[in-house]
Image: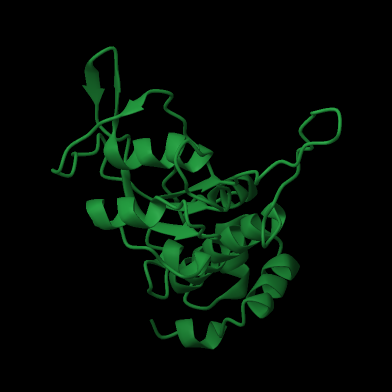
Length: 211
């Protein structure tokens, strides 16, 4: 997690802001009906490909939602899961039931999960868990590992990065009052690069001059 300083932005910070982190707590999830109090007020969007019992999503995201216990000692979630996106839903899915139980909203797109259905970034971080699908077995009894996704992982990451990047540039434009040169300095990019990004995300720099 990182806080963005728009006065002292650097290219490393800009790229770091557009990255996704994964946290892991290897322990048993806590049980109960009352929502656990997170250790931090920071909010994350959980982006997963599948969510069934004993999946990587279950082992990671469930602990971010419920907290976890080790040798009888309970620990709170490290932060709050503010939204959930599940790319594939199978009959064995537990993600929707878990989200309903803990009142975590599920969104139909990655962009909406990161903006909480709004038009600007609304989370402090992104938790991506890309799950490998069912593994066929060859005649020697060896599992043939492959990734079974409707969309490849790089595409999912690009969508996450694009949502974060667009929000970052919009905030920089607002800070710079639509001045492209100042926006480029805030983002730590060249004027040419930021101009290309503004065009890529169809942002109207003139709309920020009077804000």
